[in-house]
Length: 329
Image (cartoon, rainbow, N blue to C red; front, side, top):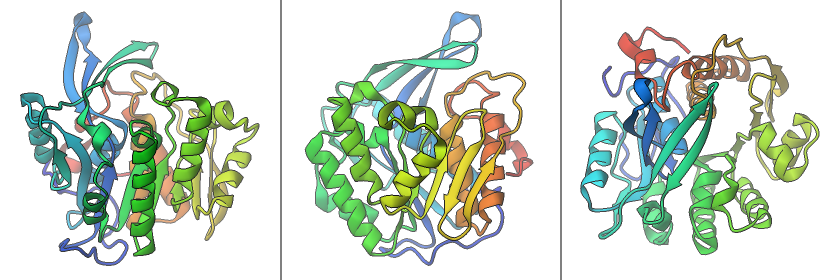
């Protein structure tokens, strides 16, 4: 498909993006990694993926061509870092917001699947993305003038405490200047120093987010939520104007300050092949629909439809779903 083609409804979006951007702009922030995904015959296929990058990749396919979809991260100066940047550019992702750090490289993860459910092994000790928030001035420059800024709990987790504070402060400044901020809480406990640090970091991040996209199984484990409504209430009380609680094949609970509470039952999936990017694609479907004028009901339906199709494919990214732009979400 062409990099800029859009399958989403309508044009438009939140006002013109400033800072020299030619039109509306979606910027995801985080870590893209080398992905080793299972392939037939016991082999592994190499690709590039990562939670916020996956969302950017799907958003590029869903947003109209006049939208810029960029990725903010840091990479090294080695051959695999260069290959990652070439891949991003070839997929229509703007890489003008990527820092190059000499002597560093990118992280790697391996997926193992059992009945469609995934487990991960990571190698990210030398990942340049851990230095993503080392330069506050750079952050202010790249976040300026964006319509939507998207980050995750993993974005927070890979940074040290000082980096987390720097990133959240920069997002707060961008939000004050008119950007919408969206957060997928996406928990990876092994990346955090402690459960207390994870709880505090996510709460700090959510306090600068307009849109929060948690998963109920993670929230009940960390915060003790008994019902999705409790998850909605916590993020609403932190200042979010839209909360979408994902819950696997159970009903999703959405609430917005404008349209109130909604409960949606996801489509039945006969076979889950790989759930790697279920939440990431849901996020892209929901955000792209909302940014192009959809109602909450329409956006939730598109998001769940996309996620249901993505988990029927292997790997995080499913380009064949968009061949010829026949798919409508």
